[in-house]
Amino acid sequence: MIFETHAHYDDDRFNDDREQLVPFMPEKGIGRIINVGASISSTKTTLALAEKYDFIYAAVGVHPSDIADLNEETYCWLKEQTAREKTVAVGEIGLDYYWDKEPEVQERQRYWFRRQLELAKEAGLPVIIHSRDAAADTMEIMKQAHAKEIPGVIHCYSYSKEMAMEFVKMGYYIGVGGVVTFKNAKKLKETVEALPLERILLETDCPYMAPEPHRGERNDSSYIPFVEAKIAELKGCTVEEVERVTEENARRLFSKVR
Ligand code: NI
Image (cartoon, rainbow, N blue to C red):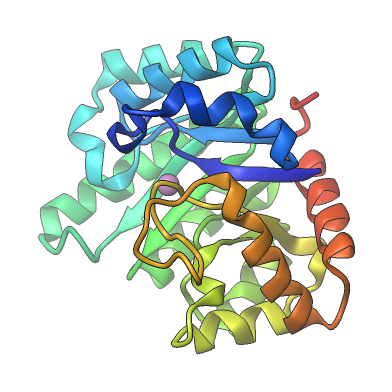
C-alpha cells in the first residue's frame, strides 16, 4: 500500500467533493494517510477527519506562517491533543523565511519552533518539519533541541543533497512529493539519487504540489504513483520496491499508526 505522509484534506479546496474523494482512497491503493495540521483551526479539522476515517491519522501543530495562533493557552490545548489515540506526530512546525522576512517575525518563528519541538519530545511523538529559505537556522535549532532524540521528517524537502545527508545523519527522513517530477527540479532529483531509499517518505502536501502531468491542478493522494515512478527511475529500482520500502519507513517513524 501507499503510505501518504502529508495531506491537507481539511483544506477549503476539498469542500465541494471531500466526501466523494476521501473515502475511496484505500481502493486506490492509498492505505494510510496522515493529515497535517498547520494552524489551531486546521488542527481541529484534522482531528475531526482522523475521528471520521480509520485510515486517516493526525499531526497536530502550527506552521511558521500561522504562529499568531500560538499563546500559552493554545499551546496547552495542543499538548492535550498529542495524547489522543490517533495523533501520531507534531506538525507541521518549523521556519519559513520565504513568506516572512521581518526579523521580529522570524524570531517568533524560532521561539515557537523550539517550543513545539519540546512538545514533541515530551509527548514522545515524531515531528513533521516545514523549512523554507531557512536551512541554517533550522539545523541550528534542531541541534540545540537535541533533535537526534526527536525523530522526524523534513517535509517537501527543498535544500541541497549535502544538507539532506546532514539531516539523515541526525536520524531524519526526507519527504518527497510532486516537485520531484518537475523538469526544473534538478536539486531534488540529485538529492533523491544520493539518499538511501530507507530515508525517503512519500507525500503530496495536497491540495498543493501536484506532480506532472497534473502540475498546477489540485493535488490529491491518488497522484502519488507519478511520484513513485520518478523515484524508481532515479533510484534504478521498481515502483513496487519504492512503495514497500517507503511504507516500512513511514511505519517505523509514525509508530502509533496501526
Ligand atoms: Ni503541508
